[in-house]
Amino acid sequence: MSANALVFIFAALCFFCGFLSALLSLPMLLKQVKPGAYGIRMYESFLSEEHWYKINCYGAKAMMLAYSLPMLCVGILLLVLRPHPFVAGVAAFLGNISFALLGMGIIKRYARRLVIR
Image (cartoon, rainbow, N blue to C red; front, side, top):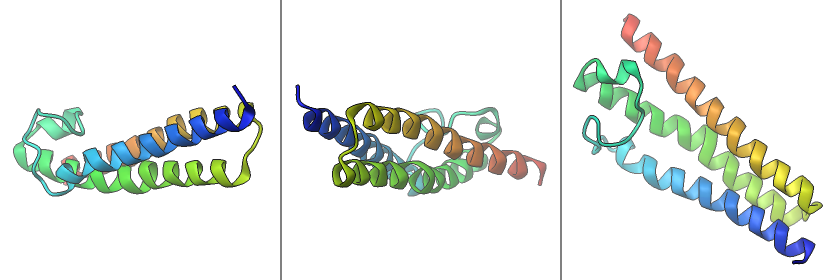
């Protein structure tokens, strides 16, 4: 397999992850996901139905901005810059992990503040 093909695969993986995350976030953003179905599943979101919808709506926005958008950008950068396949793989792997953790940290912080109020 050529180096360009590997870089393309990593870029496609980034696009797919970013697009899938954004697609799954839309129903949460529109408050159409019933409690317990899927979504932001943490202790604070199960305290009440109101908390579920608020945390999932906020979580959808946070995941779109902190995960989906950056992953789409990483995919574009990989296609434009065409780095060494190892660098592309590391960028895709670390991007997935770090952006997901960033998004979850933002959501957890919001959920804790919501419960304190």
